[in-house]
Structures are given as C-alpha cells and as structure tokens.
Length: 365
Ligand code: KG4
Ligand code: ZN
Image (cartoon, rainbow, N blue to C red; front, side, top):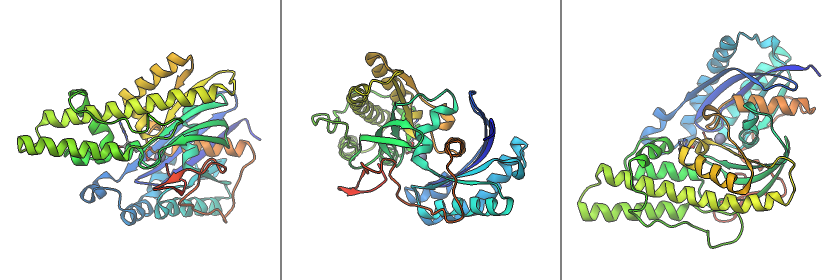
C-alpha cells in the first residue's frame, strides 16, 4: 500500500450534493484539496422539509458537475486517484442511488477502486480530518436525521450507548424555525435568534432527564415550543421579534441541557473502558452550534476528557468526510465492486441497531 493516497469522495444522502478530494500521507494530517458542496435549500423552501423526489433529481443533475469542479479545483486527474469513496447509505434512497451510480460509472470507466461508506461513519470519523483520531473515543453524533452516542473503537467498530427515541435535534431546530417564521435550515437561524433572546422566559421541558441511561427525546420539546408560541399569539395577537428570540433561546437552552446531561452519563460509561487518551468528539450539523459546542466542552473539562469537533465546514454534510472515511477503510483492505448497493437504512452498530419512530428498529437516530 502506498504511503500517500488520494481519494475522491461523493455525498448525496440528503439535500447536499458534494464531491471532495482528500490526500493523506501516513503519519500526517490529511489535506482536503477540494470540498465542493451544492445545497438544495431553495428547491425545498416551499415545502417545509426535504422532498425526496426533488432531492433525488437535483442530485442526479448536479453530481457530475460537482465531481468536475472538485477534480479541477484540486488539479487531480481521475486516473491519478487511488480510490473513489461514496456514501452508500443511510439516507434518502433516490439521492444515495445517484451518488452510488455516479461512483460506479467513474470506477468502471477508469479502473479506480470503489469504496462504499456509511454516512454516519463519515460523520463519526470527521474529527480525523483536522487531528489524529485516538481510539476508543466517545462520539456524540448529532445532526438533522441522527442523534446517538457511540464508542468508536476503530474505523469500522462502533458501539451504540443510546440516542434519540424520536426526533433528532437538527430536525427539532428546523421545526422550531418553521413554527417561528425563521428560514431553513433552521439550526443556524435559531442560533442567531437565540443570541438576542431570554432563555428563561418560557418554561420548556428537559425530556427524559428523569430516566437513567443515554436515551433522549426531542419531540415533546418541539410541541412545548408550539404551545408557548400559541399562548403568545393568543395574548399579543401576533409574534414579535423578541418573542421569536426568546422562544429560540429557550429551545436551544433545553436542547443544550439535555445533550450536556446525557453526555455526562455517556462519558461515565465510556471511562469504564479505560481509554489511554479519553476523548469526546462531537460531529454532525448540530455540532456547528456554538452554544451546544461550548456546553459539551464544559462537560468534557468537568470530566477530564479531551474535547474535539471537526472544523465547521465538516460538521454539516460534506464529501470530504466521505473521502476520508473511504480512504481509511481502503488502507485497512476494504474495497467494493459494482455490486455495491445503496441502503436507505444502515445502522453503524450492527448489534445495537437504533430505534426509529415508535420503537421500530432502524438506522436513523
Ligand atoms: O449533518 P447535517 O448536514 O445533515 C444530516 O446528516 O442530517 O445536519 C443538518 C442539520 C439541520 O437540521 C440543521 O438545522 C442543523 O443540522 N444545523 C444546526 C446548525 N447548523 C446546522 N443546528 C443547530 N445549530 C446550528 N448552527
Ligand atoms: Zn449527515
């Protein structure tokens, strides 16, 4: 195996089409040569959420273009690549299929090896784009579709400690934005509004803190925000800017408190494994939230654990994390062929598959 590997990564599992080129030399930090991302927020804006069919068509139209842009920006020819990594799930199946078909075509035409990557593994290994990964690490993966604590023991070894039993926090941020007239994606908009809000004005719940373990729930919190909003509208006949800011601040504080307390518990379980360099890593779109990030940093400091998080541009969906995860898997001997399937569900921890909706087993959450 060569010391230096250059990988193309493709991402198309939700509403961001991405292509990236990552180069890595053994013993060094990887170099992201290009990281192209084309979002679809405008296409879904009128529908109150991502429309799978629209997303799939947009991915199919844009993915070749993203690949061309990434190769041109990194000055790397297709034939010079050591591998092509692609998100093969979990996600919206039409989008995942667009990426997998594109990667297969590129691999078949060029002879460059193909590596299928689990999108969640991409998030979980993303802190390694900026600093060396140290296993086992505790990972809080928190995004629009997922929320779980994992002990990451190696690049393909994940043990799930718990997670949401209903909505993911990112989904709740998006819903709260819709309820309060803020734009999508909701997370960044709620975060900005929260900076000017009073988090104590509304008494919002901290769900499941009374239950032991690391499971979480965000659906009731969303409903509590809806009720608080409706009370304000009844009292004032409208929703003022300050009301929106206060609702945003109260909601963000509640999410932050729940994540912080559950993280304390997850750290206690993780420390029983006696890691040589105890690390809490947080990844996924919600990890871009400064208030949540700093609450988790405080918990890490309390527990004497090193805190790490990917750079902002690698928190939300991106192809650099897919190229990186594929490259790491390839170094360990993984390779796929043209039989690679696109999987809508694909739990990282095969033994402790996460719950989906009201208790069904699934890869989401
Ligand atoms: O990781 P990601 O790009 O996609 C999934 O795999 O789900 O995460 C997107 C989610 C969205 O729900 C978005 O509102 C949320 O991450 N998000 C944030 C912030 N930036 C993105 N949530 C809270 N605060 C933010 N700054
Ligand atoms: Zn994601």
